[in-house]
Length: 71
View 1 (tube, rainbow, N blue to C red):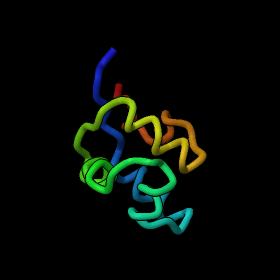
View 2 (tube, one colour):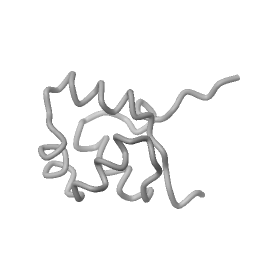
View 3 (cartoon, one colour):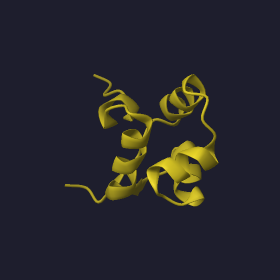
View 4 (cartoon, rainbow, N blue to C red):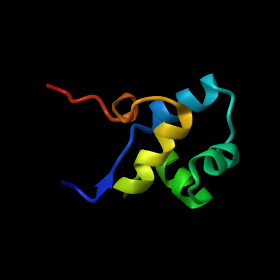
């Protein structure tokens, strides 16, 4: 299993906007650093454990924030 995950930055930003939550608020809810949320918002990979805290804080499944599997 990969140690890092890349979330779909557009999906993350859209979910944050839908819930009207700032990056700082998300950091506080998820218990992760601001740099981790910023990294995710920039579409770069983060540690799997970090990536699991963010959707939990947003009350959405991780799969809803992952990139679509093109095929």
